[in-house]
Length: 463
Figure 1 (cartoon, rainbow, N blue to C red):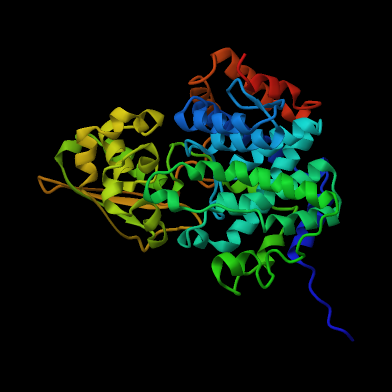
Figure 2: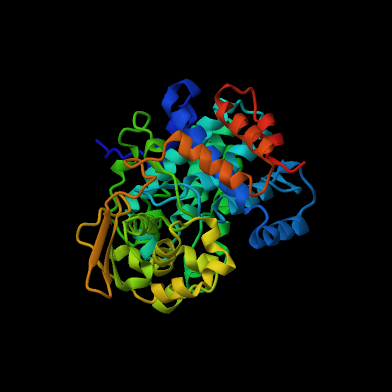
């Protein structure tokens, strides 16, 4: 008998995506999804008047022949794909958006722009749009978790690379593509997904483009796939497939991608960010704030700080040391362990105000950042969670220590719904009036009963 070939992973995922129905998704997953959409829109609004947002909008308007798709918190209207790209820049631009821990993918930064833009174009119901969002998240989380944090070690940004595949499946579902169309879309995406970490060396803005580009790539691939354009059948496990190409390994266990598919929902493991910084830093900020709150603790009396960190995270937030200790710009600061720890210790908080020009040049924080060193943490739980610990020595010989095994905001150390709403409002009113912020929140939190996305679309733009 001829040998039976295994079903390609892309076809298994496509079968799931094409057959999924709104009633197959648990009510709890929809409730959680609404919170993540709300959080993403808040971070986008907070970024809407930044220099990088102005530059991105200017570039897209200059290339545009017109369009009607909303740009979050701005006056421009763009074509659908350009709006996806722009909204991805906004959601991810401040590095304040959610992260799925095991995959290290900022899932909402691509999935929300796709859901908003294509869901509006397709006149999808609110629940169908949320289902597409959850589908993108599910596939991102499962494909990203296979890499177990090693994409970053090779200079790839999982949010850009992996996010495109989730968006391809979600776009195919919204477009009504069948299994063949979505399978082709996933194959086509292999030639479109991209995103690298070279920005870390000079604080460049390119990382902000990755999630929106993932949404554009996924939508483009889905449109081609639905039209019958043929994509590779084995984009993940093939001879030049995703994992061999990016990880240079034949050892990726792809069976985990489909294990429990449709029964276990990755949205439950998607973490919110309480701080606008790389998620690798959150446990250390937690520790710094814990130490700062201790009676009699004085940052001016610190002689040295040792941060215990997983070795795989060092290249992202500890190197090159000179730049990390004296960030040149906000983006440098958001990926700097010395700066975030020192600033949290000095100011007793770490929010968007801690990334402005005055904070970046504060002498006391810069002096304290120079005292931060790092060492391997044998107790780290990375990549299962983002752990961290601080050992602080004072000039008088006293020592303080703090450990955060699971960063606040992770699924096992969660922010509550009220915390997420408070974060949204705090971010949103940086750009819009409180009444408009409340209207956006209402539109998001009633999406699962909305006939379409028109109310949300209208609420998001400037009057």
